[in-house]
Image (cartoon, one colour):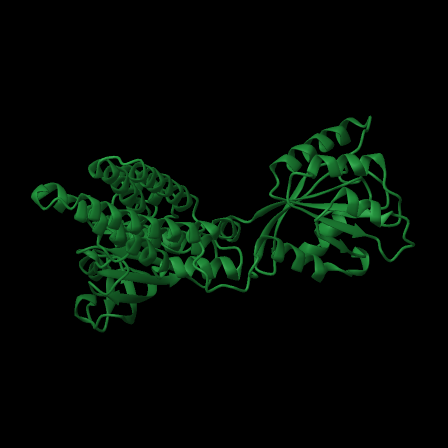
Length: 458
């Protein structure tokens, strides 16, 4: 089944201008020609051309659809196999009917991600590039798209392969030493191996330094908006989302539940969580909302702690500060257009070394300063530094940490005077762990699992 001809609808279901049915495999052209009627058979047209015609029923000669068919001959295709892409009128019935005819002529319905899997198995891309395809599809901001594009282009893969080559050279020198012990070059080999793996350790550190930012760009930053009732939390959500998603009134306790919205803040995707005002209450519904707010606070990666500048600090405010002190916090001092009653010096003492942004959200004042504070908190060189080689994939980050641990064990063994072949075991383990990132040492089960997460037709 691995190399039969596969087919799937590659566009989202629903109404639209066009829908695309994609075929890949040795039989793609033959299957297409059994249905296609145009000036020239698909097998005879030039590669990388798009051809106008009709699909007809193979026995009744009844017109099924008016189509444009892209013809792509191997090996210059996404899968490195023969491919055709049938462009039909958009619509669920039209696309599904054409797919059913294609399947009836001998194609097999593709599994999720099988086109990309074939690209990987045929050597067109490595595993990290394949994951870059999915990251591009799921990107929520331009910055996340740029990171995914660099991964798809093979920028991370080249770095990983370079590190593996350095380790492999060290492993090879040990193997030579073991095979030819008469040369008695243990000390020289161990010294050179130690230097090589130290250099690899430094490079892995550089990659891991971008991991936090890369993961944020890829998955978004869980951001909880916390504060007492009626300090402007819902107004902050609405301002950042630029839509009236939350009800805003001057009645405390209006927000009873947790609201979530994604928003792009200067290229940083935030998963904004607007919470019910945290306070003691006898209202049953509000009490449930407050409990959910406390849970959201614990799960957040960033807390926007909102205070009312028109009111003095309360014990509830101080309790919220204490509950969030161990998190990344940006203090939002709202309602600065009203007479100032809050003790700002006291506030700065309670939240030392935390940025304080002053806003008047109903007038949309201070929003730009807040957006800049969020970007600078997590991107020291600025989110504009898109030329950096961000590591964003959780699997890649975990494998880099594992490889780093193996290298540290090798360095420790070398420092303790262990036999060189014992040091080599840890170096080989690091080489294999890095190989899992690009798929060169990844088990089949992992590969199947990764591609099963792709959408059908990709």
